Image (tube, rainbow, N blue to C red; front, side):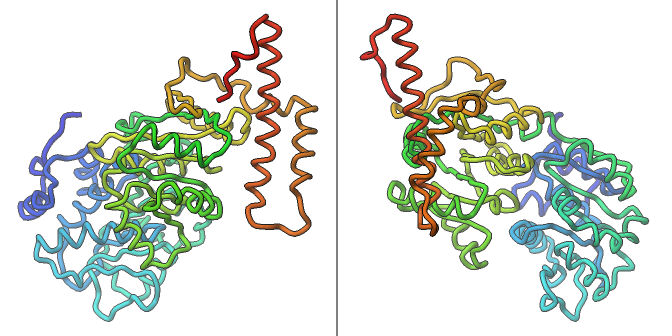
Length: 445
């Protein structure tokens, strides 16, 4: 699609000028498709993370905004960081347009409610009924549901009846980076949405490259260090699916990278804000999936997934932390040859259209794999070997205790990896001997 300027749209001249002040001159693809439609109607918009969806709905809201003591737009998001990000975008444009900031209100609890009525409300779905009871919404023009998949499919069905009036008047628009195609038909029916903008040629942004890293270093922390030292990325986000796991990884890696940072959802708001600020001058951030949505970090060029979440959609949000707007980025997934769960989740990503290239990581460093890895039988080799499974159970029993002690999981993983390494070495040496080779030539990665 040819890039056009905001000035090419039927927008108020003062809004075009304020967008230019903020550095927005050319329309991103999703904005070019969405803004003209939202000026007239509602829409369901599916577009990758970092493609410019926020501005796609903010511009129509501001273009039609008349300050008269009535709520004109409600923007709903599942996460506070994303709401704060939207708030920042709107405040900057408010200042350029000479709109008083009191016309925008972030409502996260009852104490956030004010006597005067704002023109735009940012809130969570759980607070939406309270907004309706507190503020005059008879002139409501738009209800925007951002990250719609999280709200519509994560147990928030009870709040949909409160949206009925807005739904009946075709005021609800839904934005998402990861809606599955089978969900779109249902959303269109429930929310009375005729217009669907499917703005993605690929499941993730086209400027994000995806890579698989076969990790043959026994120690995860050493392997991660070798990877980072080999690749030397400028700014990296490292993900693990649980806060306990990422905490353990972070504290183990601090000895190598003392200036690295940790971000999980259980940190208080001030700490989260400080970590986000510090990451602007730091190069490595360890995080749970809390940071995969809503937090917009500049210049991230590398994302690493040490494991994959059960819901594959979260991977796309992780990958979307890099390659934002016009920037290039890389997303790497670590896996072991015998990690069945991780491999099955990789297969799911491949089914959903992700194209990977392959790397091999060993003690000598990181190198491109000679061939694209086949996943047909991966993760099943060890399960089909009863003798190896018996050795693994024996190794686990040796480190088991009645009382769970610190680093227990780490000790179990290490014990299992030692058994598997010995098994692999034995298999390789046996094959070398069978072929008449010299076992002294064997090099252990």
